[in-house]
Length: 118
Figure 1 (cartoon, helix red, strand yellow):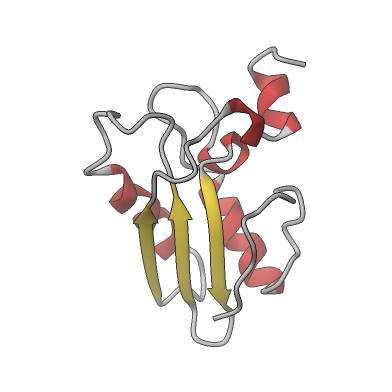
Figure 2 (tube, helix red, strand yellow; figure 1 turned 120 degrees about the vertical axis):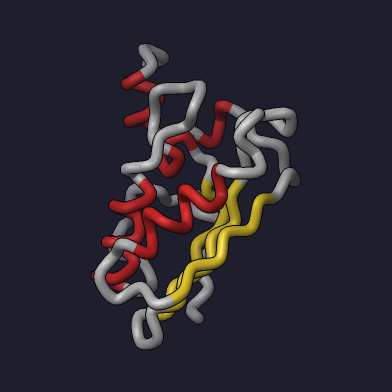
């Protein structure tokens, strides 16, 4: 799999992995945080995204806005199912991480605009 950083450049959908990576990011943008009306990608909950466009394997490292989030047990499978719907995806692994803790600083400008923070 091609590692693709800790995603500080969330708007670069064409990074390592090309079109397949872009389709995975599009799928992540269809999944919304259960408490904040913004998708998980622009909210900055996705800390790492590794894609292999040849095998279709995807590894996602993500967090939630708070460790006590009531969907912590079920949310990774929602993310996994969304990415498995991407053409070419053969296997998806979602790892929930808590370090570093999520902060508003991880949000994209689009998310800040959507929440009236810009």
